[in-house]
Amino acid sequence: MQEENLTTENPEEEQAAETTKTEAVKEDTAETEKEVSKEDKKEKKKKDKADKKQDALKEKIEELEDRVKRQMAEFENFRKRTEKEKTAMFETGAKSVIEKILPVVDNFERGLASVPEEEKDSAFSQGMQMIYKQLMTELENMEVKPIPAVGEEFDPEFHNAVMQVESEEFESGVVAQELQKGYTYRDSVVRHSMVAVVQ
Image (tube, rainbow, N blue to C red; front, side):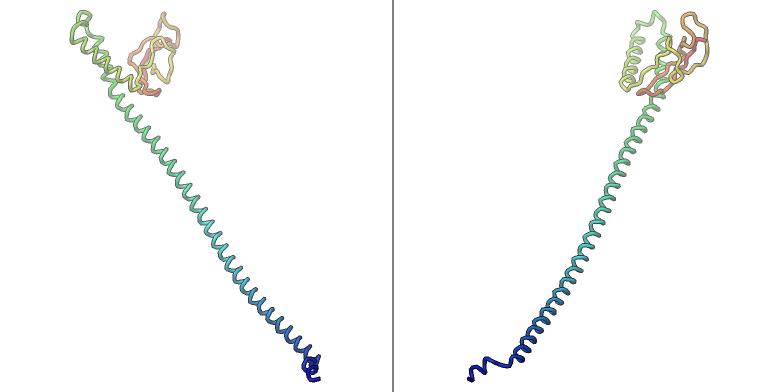
């Protein structure tokens, strides 16, 4: 009988104990859930912070990459511009030197034209002819070429008309006489031909 009393306690107490246990478990679970949710919130905040930091870093990287690309483009433009300027300076310098040499060429031609027929075979005259040919060859190698004039249609880009003449040989508007030879350097005029044009 005593054994029965041990196992059969008061059902209300047992139920109350059960309820207390259940409530305790619920409270524990609730506290655990609160702790977990707090930790989740902390984790989420950390993750959000890390994401924001990552986004900020990505933005900064993109900005820096854009800056570098712009700098590279600017440098490339600068390089091209300086290359053009260097070429233009070289062209200007070469033209300047050629302009100074042309009067020497003119004087050579005048001097050779004034040599009398009987002296054209002399050693001096032949030496002058050879020097003149060498000078003209070097100018041609530098792309300096005489402008064709006599018999050509007058072209104001290449010819400078200083007088008009009558001619039975040429039509009107054609160059009849070349008073001073003109030259081009790489397709740009260094000196215009001074010409007489048929009326």
